[in-house]
Length: 503
Length: 122
Image 1 (cartoon, rainbow over the protein chains, first blue to last red):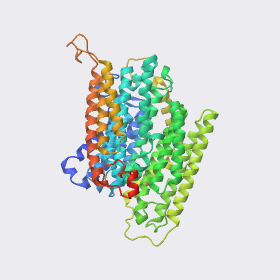
Image 2 (image 1 turned 90 degrees about the vertical axis):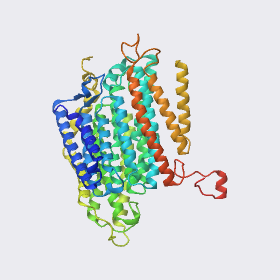
Image 3 (image 1 turned 120 degrees about the horizontal axis):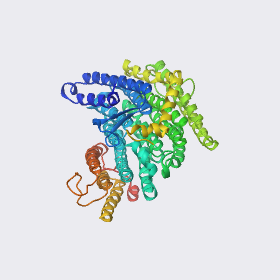
Image 4 (image 1 turned 30 degrees about the vertical axis):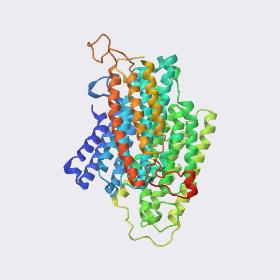
């Protein structure tokens, strides 16, 4: 279908807008029904999009029929359609969890959730860098409001930091865009990739400044080392479905890093060839280190999963620094795995804290769970998957990253850090599991609400991804390899996207 | 003209960054506003500064690049909405946390530490 590539943006926009209007906006039940229907539609259309892209190749969608590079285009290639499907799946699962009661904390949860999905999908699909900024703002403003959803001191405090940091980030983004437009004269990413090779002298230096400004912004979103301080507090204080949805937010930053520094400032950028790599290397390795220390020091499940998000960001940044087809392919696989697994852990943390009374999700001796078997089973799967042990997806993802290192120097730095990071996660998960499930005082509390069916279904869906990603590992890695090859090939990632331009 | 323009943008950015790094939410919001003004002027200049050149074909001998003007318009709208949100959030934080410090608690001055006076409203 010709218009399929815009559906992942239009569906959440329409459903979000409808839910703001009277008959539905007043009634939480009809909001829930329309949210589930909306995310289900989104899931179906993204799956169709992925299928279509996989069979017939990259699709260009010129908005308003203004052709690139003059108008804004949506580029649905293998990379973006995979990430859109990931977002839609995550959105559907998280929505199933939210309708069990977490959405009642404040008004407009459902419309905001939809707008956030729209922003994320838009950021993945757009082929225009200013449009990327606009979609960043769409997803950010929805995330500001979602973060403070249900209120409370801790959330307000975390939101103030998050909002101020991201507003400064947006300003830097615009400075970077201004410089790049001033030097390159275009905002279409494919067109920029073609023109950047011709820059010389002063203009190249200016463009380099702009490009590194953008790296700061994307690094802020992706929780790259000096800009990661906001993440643990923000994610740990957000309400469970919001934190689970935020698991994809760092990936938006990482996706932008892959897109901008592979396609535009990649191997064909002349004087600006691979400008991000010397910065990405140390920062990626330090991010893994800091994240692992954070994992070891975590006092509660939520902080633990927030720190694991930082570790996974670091691993993905290391893939971006290696900058090869294999590394990008590994990163795409690992992105899918780590998003779904950490989202599952955020949701599980909420169930854990609800069933343990005052101890919440902290690693202290407390009362028994109301549903110990269910919780223990789910926790074990998440833990195995996130630590990276077979038979779950984390293992395959980590092996792919380890295999992607190219030289012995790279191997010497990346292997120990990733493996020690996994060991740290293993230690913390064992400590957490032992305390949470085996050290009790007193009986299970009677007033604790057991997990409802839709909550169990949501977590089960996310957990199911761990074995499924392994069982269909062959097909998925083949797909990610094709996606990465297309991203690294300047012909398919730039020249083919501008009609009437050839090398 | 370029020199003066660049100086103004630079001054606005410097003031914006300085104020953003302050501890109280009011000065932070003012800093963010200045920063967004600087960004808007900067974006406008990315299409080069020209005199007597309307962004319409046929109105004058030379014309200026219309795209930065469209970008600035978008940036102004988004920046304005974000500033409005930041103001409301700062007020909410003032109400929830009891003070207007961005960290939610006032850092103790050396003189206060000795008096053991707790942070709070002034």
